[in-house]
Image 1 (cartoon, helix red, strand yellow):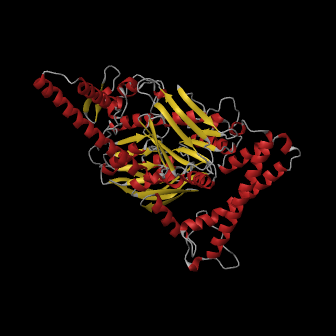
Image 2 (cartoon, one colour):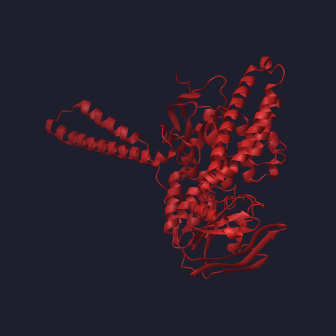
Image 3 (cartoon, rainbow, N blue to C red):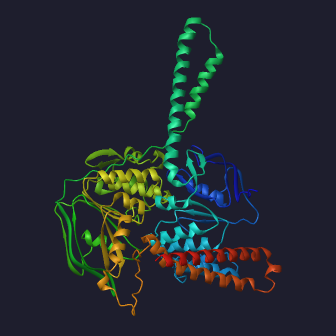
Length: 601
């Protein structure tokens, strides 16, 4: 017998002014659903998620969660007000004897709980939000852009956590690789409608394009019908001098139907224009070293970057990607070695912290007061790649509505802030693009366009990103920050770097230690005989997973041994019992997998 849905939305309507954001929306989320919530920036994805969680009340309709089914949400920008530490915030709302779940979650995301929110980095705040969500042990998890500010290792950890959970989840993300790996259902928010298909994200674009094609065919048929009825209205009435009022009304209805159709959001009219060509050599680094105190960022690093290359920098948060980027562009001096910049470089910078945007400005003043694009603050004209443009027309190219022009930057969504930064960046001719996390918050369509523009850009690109799919599509060379000052230079994108690093880790037979002194397992395991690189990595990770499951089981066993737990709180006893069974099953599966891989290796 099918299980009832965890959450049901019926007849939901919401209007923030102008066209309705949602109108008569109904949907259900069932146990085991793994849903990708997709749509253009500003289509209402985050708002829909907040309606699901009960943080936004719709104008009409009902939101019903099954009794005893908890719905928890991870927001993009969590509010830590009133909490002295991240750990206290993660534990908020848990019973005293449930604190172990917060400890497990904090350990999982590799976060110290004693960090003050004001002193936390963007990545630490995002990991705290993840820990709080996981600690709540909800039947339905709502995750709004969980991978923003996370490094690739933490994204892969989260991917494994969600892949192994039995809980339902709804996921908003710009990370295609993340969505492809995890989702089995799609909710597409588009012009006030929410369509569902029970297929994974890898099928989304094919499905979307088919719907658009069907819409175009229907619109074409409607236009032909209106044209035929309009011809009759002229010729038929003139011939007979007598009106058929039924057909006249039909023509009016058809025209009203066409007028009521909401036009699809277009693609931002983005365009890079290269400045005059730089020299063939863009950057030459020789034996570069940089440290902060005892911490080495780069040691003995050398490379030559030629005009037209696309260089991606990857590595854990704190490994020094932005530092190396600043060294390569001359913004930071090395402690040792030399950096030589090529001739005629005209750089343009996209800053991951959005620090180029003044929260006190509006969209209008952000451009009209920017001297880099001819803004003086005294008129409504800016210079776009050498041509005078009206600020309203230019911002419309980036899908901003006219009524938004005087809105404060603080009112913009993350995706809109990213588009505004791109608008400023693309107004300036450049032959060296320095892009620090440009993909955060952008929707799939804008990411596609940005990739195409970078492919066609007649200049050089330096890119910091944690988006594996985007790096694979863009990069000609990937610099992997290994830690302790080591940088590995790999040809191609992120996936290429994995295989190349695996080969480098393997040592020749003559260099192996004798059997009496076995070598320690490297941080990035080599592909072992009989195993692929992925399987070797999994074999190295399984002992940590097993230890984690064992720790969970021990804590849950202690909890269930609490006297009178069943009589005092039967719901908690039932949840703990279910959790214990789940952890025991996961432990058994992990041990069997480890034995199988170990035997093959």
